[in-house]
Image 1 (cartoon, helix red, strand yellow):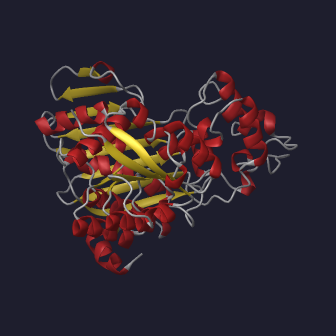
Image 2: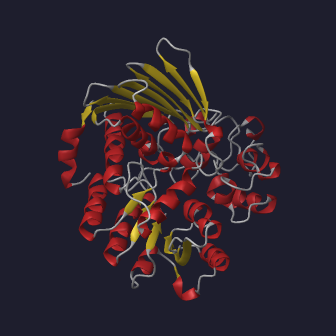
Image 3: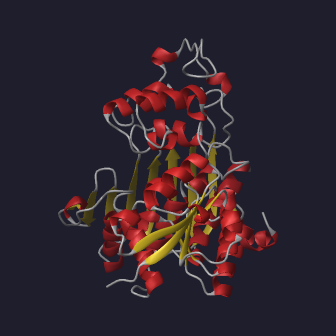
Length: 434
């Protein structure tokens, strides 16, 4: 029988409270929450009550929690992006193994410091590149590793952010302004950089990138727009980004249509019509998308030259109906078209009939990022108890840093008109910081 792992969670937002904490109820024999930290008292009260955590193990910040003697086997660090590195290093000094929400940091020097601390203190630090653990990408990895499509020469992908997700997270939400969080290409797409490297086994040589904030700015506000959706907006009827549409009436995201999970759970711990209306009337998610403090891009293209001569590209766009990933892998003997939204993989061997793989038939649980969240947490717990090994799937901090190098180089290129950034030079230049 597996040993139970005790966990301290720093950060009770959507990832900490709504995604990771519930695994303590899903498999209590394997995971128990014994300490929590968050600056919002209501979140502390809710989570403490749900998981029976005593008041003396409830803290107003990760820093306060980490001042104590070691409280658990592992720390889940799910705070804001710029807090991750310092908190992770302090937790390792205390003896915690860590499940670290991505990104590690928007500062490459801090990323290296976390990796160095993990080696120095001999701690397991797993970064939450959750898509690696999905049945979908595990199947693609199996196909590529088998040599079925030969050597991968080109990869072309698109991250469909989704129009309402862009408005929710990257215009109104926590990741709207890179001055206080991360560049969008890092926050949203370090997943993709990590996947490309892991799936193909290749290393990136150089990067170029273009993108900007095309739409979500004051000059594009329609006539009659108000600063808040609920206060006299005369453009409300035809505005697709209207907060009441997204959070109340939208069939896919609105609480009136029965959607009480994400994104509604970000606005309210117990989403219903009354609590959501209150949130959009008074909170950040009711602001006009053309009158926010956002500065991250709403579209971006990244081009990557690999050290073996292969090429890869990623297009990220907030102007899509769906929230999904679509990728084409082109090899010397065949190709793969991977549509994660449909959970379908089309495998074409040159000169042979194509094969359609319905990934929904390969596993039963696809909840939480295509089934990746539960598998990732279980792999982490196995690693802590010694029942699993740090295999090729596990995203150790040392492995994760490379995806951050690419994303941060892409942002540097974007800010410099698409200038080609050579990663060896970038790594050397950034040894002193960024």
